[in-house]
Image (cartoon, rainbow, N blue to C red):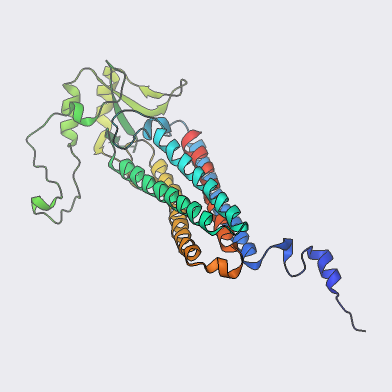
Length: 324
């Protein structure tokens, strides 16, 4: 006995016949990609949250790390990161307007809104590159102990962070940097820091107004500040000078903080950069009238789904990494 499956039964199961949820194949595949990518980012953020909870007493304070603004000197906690977030969210708004204009077959409006979205994405990527460079370069410098802990310095008179250059004492040592004008292309121990360990230690001993603060966060939510006597005793455990952050050393505190910073923000930055390139391709297709000839701007809507996803992920990264 033959069994015949009617179109009506298919419609009752899928609710969209050959177009489940009344979405095209392209849209469905974009949603599959977004869901899988969301799970990937979720895993990264959960790992970050677990590590931070485990080492919460020594985790760097974001307000003390991300304090820089281009072309301005001073302490501006989270200001530039907030600016980056605002730009990315506004680019999502312009993308919504581009999709809406595409539904109404308004070619010129799609062009201008897509252009604004591309500019916003480019500003965000450039800002993130600048933030990386600033994070890697460092600002104040610190010392690392035998146990891998970071100790920083504070001016007891002002209560503000003290940079190594503020108190280090120049000593007649053979210090060579890897620079072209030095004529040295290779050195076994790598690039030397701006100040040697002896220069920092001797400068600290000669500056009674400089104190040491450790990674440990006290009950007030601040790094623990040692007395002058405790600071001098702490110097016996130091092994090297640390400037900036990389995957091995981190002047801001726990090395895991730098590892997660580079990995999570870098992975998201790659997504934004890819989105900008895709938007540029779609932008020129709109100018050439490709979608006008097709009679629809569905491609703009599909890339819009990706762009909104990237913006939403950044909201979570911004919240977990910078605010909490």
